[in-house]
Amino acid sequence: MPTRWATNSSSPRRENLKSFPFPLKDRASILPGGFSADGAYWIDPKSGAWITSTYYRPELPKWAQDFNSSNRAAKYWDRDWKNANGETLRSTGHRKGKDGSDAGFYEVIGATPFANEYELEFAKELILYENLGAGQATDLLAISLSPNDILGHQVGPDTPEMAAMALALDRELADFFSFVGHQVGLANAWIALPLTMGFLRSTRRREETPHSRRQSRLRQNGSADQQRTYKEILAHSRRHLYQA
Image (cartoon, rainbow, N blue to C red; front, side):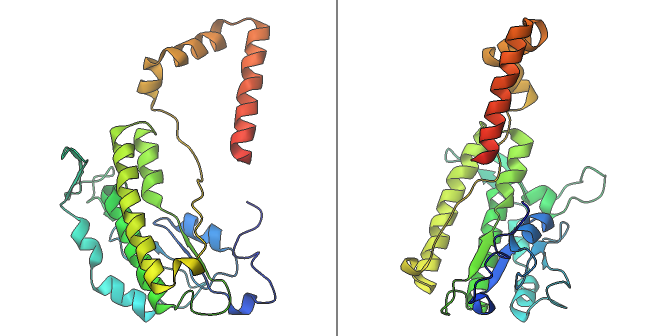
């Protein structure tokens, strides 16, 4: 991504435009905002508190400090994430992390719908206190819903957890869009839902599918022409995937 969306919003009205990106992860916050964002936020992996960089401002604005002081992250600990049938998919109970220390907010809660809810709560505060959508220029709020990405890397795309995550996110976005409609008016908002990437099935699941076994045999035992055809198809698919 050689240029950034917010940086390229450098029209004659750029001085009146407000731009704020944020997800759970730092890199996913900084990139959408580019050089000219008015602020970028992400969480401290251990505590879940929202933080920023001195590149944008010397300290958090008061509204963000108040958000952290209210300790809203605490309510997502020690909860069960259940699907529509009431089956528990994950628990956010305190536990040890991969390194043996106490696991933090990102590691325990980051791959659940609770983290999406937490992000959207922060987004509501930002809209209110930064007065987004109140001026003549088009403001930019870029929310990267990191939990979908985190969970997808862990379990793959076609799992009960990802299905439940999608249903939970649908409800959470409905609530958030209702808030935007009340605060700004949906007629005054442009909402885009881009997809940044896809996920492969887990290794175990790929090995269990007949299609993947045929692909494996083709790569290992196919003729030169068959192998060349396979590689051409794969290259074509990847090229069009990244262009989409």
